[in-house]
Image (cartoon, rainbow, N blue to C red):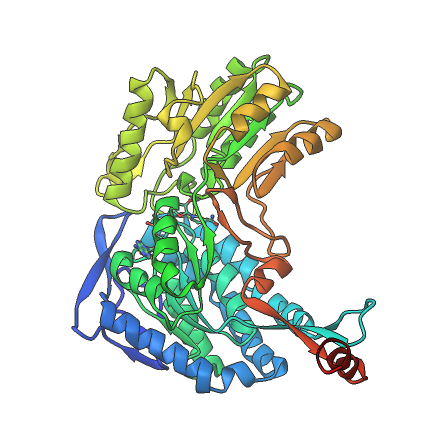
Length: 502
Ligand code: NAD
């Protein structure tokens, strides 16, 4: 596996069991957002490279050993990979932190948490693949078989590169599908590292292919290709809509994990200090660049002013710094472009009349001078029709909205095109579950946030996506079911005689 260095050697892509350059020899640079310096050169693949990778996966599925291998044999490979990931967790975390600016410590908790997922899927997939006999008043054997989808194209975003890979790849591969993987251009290193681990663990060639390069070229080809059976995409809602259009050619299966603008409802029975900490917890991890960040904080008016003040005090005082420093709680945003986008949203908040309580601009003092740092920012007096309440900012910005009744809180929470996550903070258990059930979101956190477990399905309602990752649902998503009717008695003879041959 590639070892962390301030500047890595040029990375190749993995096609048909070979580490190779892009066919035209083109590369692109990834800039370390903490320092503004080049971290690594990667292959800039084109449509031809995407076709090579897809062909390899197609051939490996149609003719290779992987789809026919026993679950026991596949499990051995997965266990080795899981152990390698656990052993290299800190190395992987530093690599991802140097690409996307999320603190390495935060990556490390995700990597350590996801390593066992590679083991969990083995047993669950084997159980799910067992044929299920169906009983009922029917004069034949009826059996439901769960089978592979075929060639899976996986496309992931830059914000949680390892997590997104680990939610999709093991669930896709374990059932015997083959995979073409395109990680985000900004963060391919950990996915390339895991491809190397699968190679070392003995995965047959072509079963996993990883390519890098522009999504609009390489990713679009993966979505369009008739040789792909299923595209599993995570990214922006707008990109997801393009995937659906491109996938229409062969009506391939599409699963989508898309954007969010999650409401965090805080009721008045929560003490102010605790309420403010829960507001910060919902947003602070991952530099606020998280799909399920609780960026719309809805606070009951009885405690609204006090919670806003305290939230700004806590969030505004978190350590901002280099993503590799163990002290850092908020790192730089992934790219200069993303930083400018977030600063644009902050300006729009000011223009639309929200009250800026802390932050509100770029940080460039001392060691931050060449990085893409934005100060943790809190706006109060936000109304749900402002841009900062409707659109996904994807940065360290909290928008605080007051409400007066439970009904109003639910209405505001659900007034969004997104439906990925929501939160309910109250000590009243009945109220918490009542409100959680009314939220039109795929995940709800009660008195917590950021606690996704891979035993539980993860995904969104509305424009936050189609399908679920993780848990049993995540494995099922990469399979299809077949119904087999078998007549071992005389029913078909009776049918022929009664309906046709009398
Ligand atoms: P993005 O949509 O710009 O890119 C995502 C991936 O799609 C990248 O690999 C990119 O190269 C590729 N891509 C870009 N254009 C493409 C095209 N035309 N065809 C095919 N692929 C293309 O998203 P991003 O900026 O990398 O990530 C941030 C977004 O991801 C946010 O909206 C966030 O909410 C979402 N996200 C969702 C989840 C979830 O589980 N729901 C998790 C993480 C991130």
